[in-house]
Image (cartoon, rainbow, N blue to C red; front, side, top):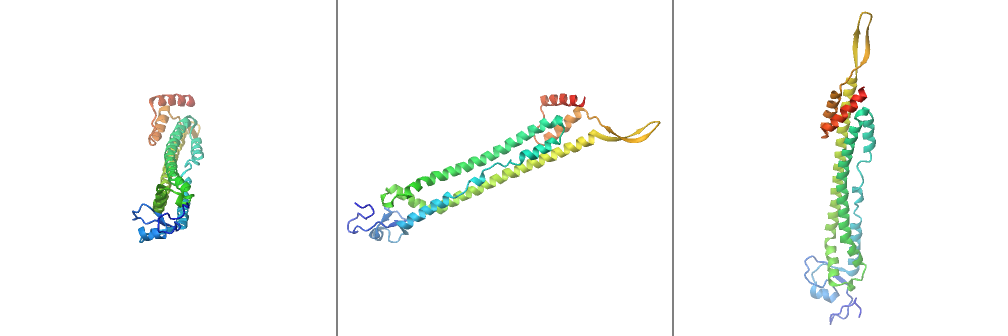
Length: 265
């Protein structure tokens, strides 16, 4: 028995050459010969089996090309060099504190980017789960498919534009999320740079000053070192850190005070 021929009596064993793709069709059998369509689908939207296979395959290929990789990648490629450069300009005895700020920042950026990557992977997996079974099914001769398989292909054919729009919109949303992470990174970098510039200016102003030396023999301006007290230095660093939500604990203050005292000695 040739499965490509209609088995209905009085249909003269015509070839099964049409597929009904009408969204309003309620007839169970979607494939048929010319007489089948005169009987059951006379006003319905139809495609030849060749047209149907070609268009389903094209829709699968089109949706498969939706690109998710652009949403991946790390926003911190340039983070290390920029932060490290700024940290090297700080005094040695507070460098470790800025390193902790750096670690917290990178951790937060990584966490945000990981969420974007996870969402991207999930969308990609959902798309593959939806398309892979169809790829296998459409490779078969349509008359050899069972009713459920054929109905799934017809449903996909009808909804392919909507599916493509859905996944394309998903990539746009992921790109927006990635852009927000980059903007957040840049905001924190600018804030970090501003904090370090404030510190550098304060250190420059406080560590060196010019005093007029007046005695019995000479009147000259000579540069003198200004001694910054350990507590003053801690307060300066603490003020800068508080703007980034990283205040010192009491144990950190004690450790830092000890380190500065040794440094000044």
